[in-house]
Structures are given as C-alpha cells and as structure tokens.
Length: 317
Image (cartoon, rainbow, N blue to C red; front, side):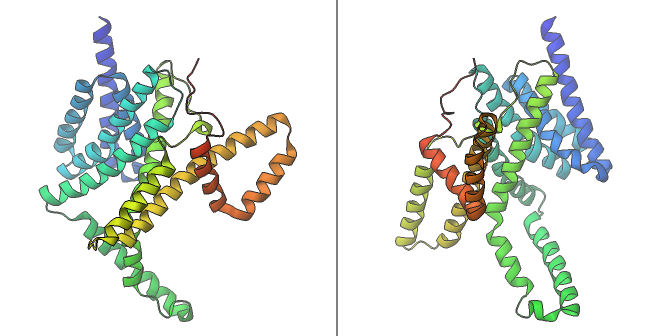
C-alpha cells in the first residue's frame, strides 16, 4: 500500500513536469518557468530509484513528441530532465550521508548541464540535421550588424574600426566560458528549488547554506595540473588552440573561485555582524572595494587551500 502511494506521488510529479513543459511550449510568454523543470526532475531523482528516474524521462519524451515535436522533446529531456535527475541523485547521496555540503550536487550539476547541452547540439545535428550553433551565430551576426549600422548612423566615431566579424570571433572564443556559466547558474537554481520542493513534501532535508559552499577536491592543484598539461600540448607542437584553451581555463577557474570567495565573504560578514566587529567589516569592505572581483577570486582560491571556515569535514548533527 505504501509503495502504491509512493508511486502515485511520483507519477503526479512527472505529470506536473510534463504539464509545465507543454504549457511553456504552447504559451511562449511563460517560458521563464522552464527553470523549474530541471528542479522537478531533481526531486524525482531524489525520491525514486534509477529505474523510475529513467522511466520518467522516457515517458516525458514520448508525450512531448506526440503533443509538440521531436526537437522540443529532445531539448526538454536532454537539457532539463537528464541533468535534473543527476542533481537529484547527488542530492540523495548527500541526504543519505547526512551531509550539509551543497558543493557536491552543484558541482555534479554543472558538469551535467554542460555535457547535456553539448550532447543536445550534437544529437540535433546528427539526427535532425540541424546545426543549432550555426543558426544561432547567423542570428547573432544579423543582430550585431543591425546594432553597428544603427550606431554608425548617429555616432560613427565610436566604432570606426569595429566590425561584426571581430565580435563574432570574440564571442565564439568565449563560448566554453559562457557554457560553463550557464551550467553553474542552472545547477544552483535547480538544487535550491529542488530542496525547496522537497521541504514542501515534508522530506527531512536541511535548507542549503550558500556560506558552506566550497569546491570539491583541490581546485588549485587541479587548475595547476591543467595549465601544465596545456603548456605541454603547446610545447609538443599540437595544432590545438592552446591559447584559447588556456584563456577559457583561466576564466572558468576564476569564476569558480569567485563563487567560493563570495561564500567566504558572506560567512565572515555575518559572523562579524553578530559579534559586533565593525572594524573587521570596514577593513574587509574597503579591501574588497579596492581589489574588486580579483580580490574575491583570490579569497576563494586561498580558502580552497586553507579552508578558513572548516567546512570540508562537517556533518549535520
């Protein structure tokens, strides 16, 4: 009887996810609610075993193929449902270990969202014979040309040497970084929303604390090894774009350290406010104001080595 109740509840959640996907497909103005779809599947991944989780994606795919089309079904299942399920599985592991660490589901989620997006582009190109990246770049080029023409008409001195080709090359070079940023944002939103839904369902889960976020493993050593690997590839004369790889590696790790740095800053500001240490707050605020984002990134990098907050080994009690 309990299993039937659990199964019916899980089925209702799957139906809710499919309904939301259908609504946003037929009413584009509500597409902002698409951010909830991965979170719903994260809930499914948390409360069900692997068999039911995979089955929920398969059911969703066929329903969306019938009521919308194959392209939209692939988009929802690959970009939203699959990484959502993976985040849910990582969350379940943390719950079973009674861990309050939020970095593992988010870190796993970032990787899942990035890989799923790349996989979606590859599948649409192979199966549907549509190169979405090329189509997107054409739309972007048209938009850039329109903006440049508009600016030249009124203030030509501002962009005398600027052309759309240079901007497109720059944008293309930044794609890996933007893909990672999109994955990071999606992972954070998915995890926090899924925990919110789980609490509403009376699951015994603690609200995640951003101040406890840290990068798993030794991020500094990992970045250093990757830099050495890229330098080695460049040294042996490979035709890979090593400078471009190096730039994107630097941007990705800088972003990761910025996230951890923000968590550290919030942690200490809250602590100092409670303790009434106004001098510490003023001094730290002035220092961060002088160094800006670079200072926050440096704080995150140092914390990944020293662990100021002592958060790597705690367990919920």
